Length: 132
Image (cartoon, rainbow, N blue to C red; front, top):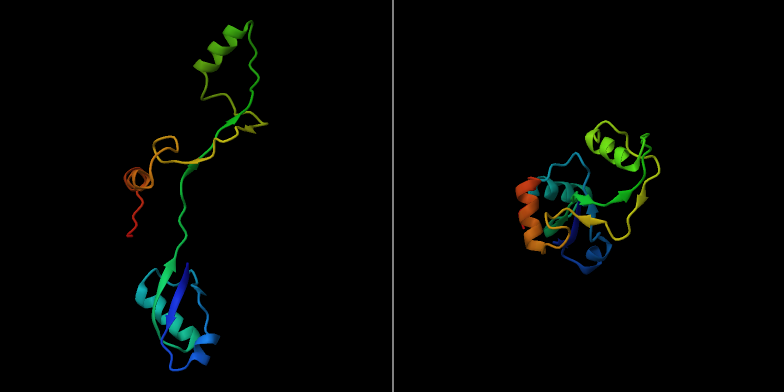
């Protein structure tokens, strides 16, 4: 977490020039505006009029890979049948290759949802909770 765009409350422009515009907030500080405000003041010795909080968000993403697995069988048809019937028992391949342009946000619509639709999807299915 980082406090950015800090609006300092100082009497002189000289002091203002020496104060940071952003401050990294340690992980032990809870995401509480009063606690963060106190941390900023205690760290710098100056009061402020406000700040914005830059937080880390972990967005669910997907991508595709392709690979091959070895199946012993008497024919290709039998190999396919065996694979389909035992898919959960067959180990993943060991040389996956990334499928170009498959990297996307998990938005419930193959990466095609709008920002608002994606926000709603993440709140509903991934239990994100964020105040704007």
